[in-house]
Image 1 (cartoon, rainbow, N blue to C red):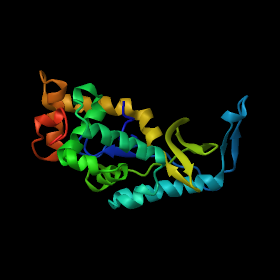
Image 2: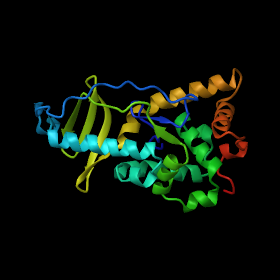
Image 3: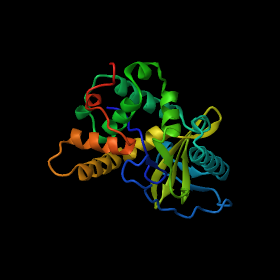
Image 4: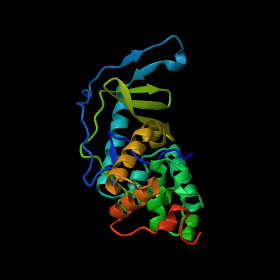
Length: 242
């Protein structure tokens, strides 16, 4: 099953996926930049968690630059701040969109995103695309837009080359240190929130379609509404020309 595509509830919204307006987010006051180093140690070294001020600043800077790129619709700039796992996520999505798989075989979030890609691109176009192309499409093609509020964490906890942004004592977002810089680990983050997003989209689509509609019918109507034009029913079973 594809690792889910979009999007952390506290950071981004799927482009009008759940409602016509951006979903509100809750912003939690971040700790001061002078926050002292804190260490929480368990019985094994592997689970030692340390908050290091220098890394905290770098992670916040990466998140700010990514959010700015999203706000400006600058896909290449946003791409610089996502990790390799994020591109693997988009590669999975691309393979499914280009395949003859029926959306009924996927969960609702996967089906929603694949149908939108199939509506915008033919089988030949999908075959020629890369994971980076798909990512750029999500930024520049109105499939993603920034959250209503800038996210701020209570703390950022580091374990080796990985980190989590914490809100209310729980991880809200993951980061990875790659090639000398901190990047957003969206693939890991989306895995954690995929079920919530899938259920939210399904509920919105079902409500829009009304009682009696099948899941596929509700999805088709919902995506057609978001795209502003009728989506070909044949795309439920595969890409155009595939």
